[in-house]
Length: 188
Image 1 (cartoon, helix red, strand yellow):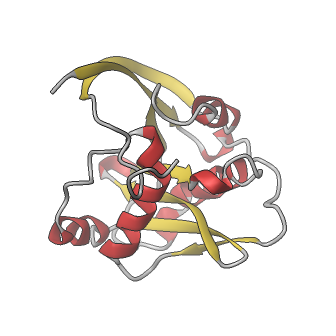
Image 2 (cartoon, helix red, strand yellow; image 1 turned 135 degrees about the vertical axis):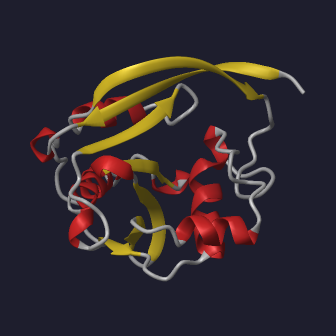
Image 3 (tube, helix red, strand yellow; image 1 turned 90 degrees about the horizontal axis):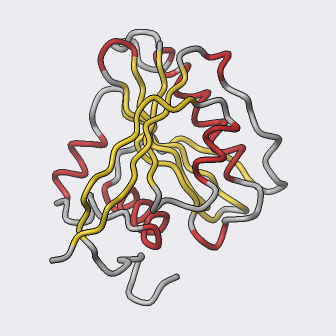
């Protein structure tokens, strides 16, 4: 199997005041926390959002692996809906020493370019900063971080920077070159 070089950038915020929120959501968009761990729904979001931008690391996960991840203490999934249809999501993972990682963030392709991404990211960052208020076993958030790469959406890095994230690391990694998995063959 051939590989491709991928540039991976790691970004962080170290204070809630670092967040520079985007504007309001368009009419008809609401955010709901997915409070019942559902491997089927989480895999749907992952494959639908990441299919055209080469998210492949979780595609081989078993049902049990998905369930284990979703049941981790301090793990949250926030879903954007436009008029009742899932449009995108933010997945948070509370870690040691008050760190919260934005593990995944993005929009289903049909919902990109509709002014949902900036507000959804802002909302997710705010939920990362106040995550300990919903999880008594977690210490207050001291750092919110994420990584993105040159295979992610064309506006990803700019959106992160506009929301107040600062670059703290850059790496070149080798990834398997695979056809875009998509939520199904031929999906955009």
